[in-house]
Length: 452
Image 1 (cartoon, rainbow, N blue to C red):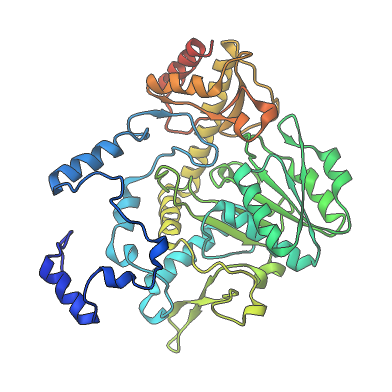
Image 2 (cartoon, rainbow, N blue to C red):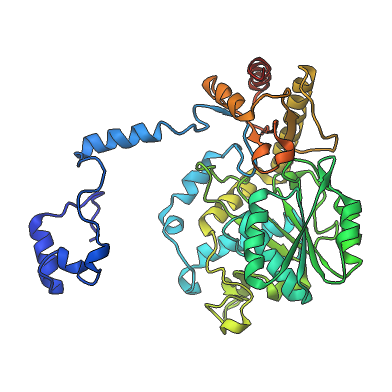
């Protein structure tokens, strides 16, 4: 019977028995291969041992220093959002058969896990308008990098063009991937908060493997994918779109607008913020690119008795096929968090997702109007979803403003000056369906008060 203790103490006798079993006289002898000259001698600068009660109190105090959304009203997005999480999600993913499942290599004993992943793939295809989706990626950032690698391999070209309105961290990861594959990255600037189409037309060449855009982009603005599509396809490149799945409850699907690859982060679909992760990336492609897709795909089949069953198929990573034939070194998928997204979508349904997306849209626009009414400048006039940019008065620090907001119970917006020096003094504000009118009004009033 498994031991159910949360903590198993080790006595001096336990230690002596273990050392005897492995044939070592002391703990010091375990490190005899480490040269004496580089060993640390002395006592590390750390506190002494605590008893269990004191340790728990200490850890609670440390956790209490986190500015979480249970105690603060969040207007911070920039990739991780404070959405409503139906309580059924935690109930379902806490079941041991899901919670402890790892890689479903043996389909005969993993049918429930495989079916859950298959449903996730199906939902992603419906949301994105693409033909095929994989079993999920680590997160939206790495999914975008993998999309760039796929595009370069499929077109046998070396240049990737990425909009500067794509999430800064995603662009950093893309550059890291590109160095390893000897690819060239060209960044396109913005006009009125969206990709500069004139600059894009000038940048694409016959060596362009793909154009990578995000919509809604990092500023919350909605890109004109229908205008971008002919620019990249005109040179036989691929269009890669990173999408917010919540926004797809209202917007036309990237697939119908000509995207060849659609990626994104499923965090808005019932996945906790968890102070920044983990999340779950999705990856969907047009059918001709199916066999180049990274990660794994769950397929539906029938057994010898004609019963429906599920199996892992088209695993194109180096663990399953010859290394030189592999399209990716992605070695796993976020099955538990993909299950969160599937439960969320099945619970909300088509109408529920549309309603939630519409609330995000309407509340964000209400907040923008309130701030504009109070004298704040909104520098971009492009349509936006649930995030928008606000310019603070000249000389006012976003960091100092956010500290003042925090003391009043609000998590303020992202400081755009961190990633965009030209936007110093600008704040990216997110408003989700959880924010009430009273909270929005209070936030606007407090921002007006402290941004002086």
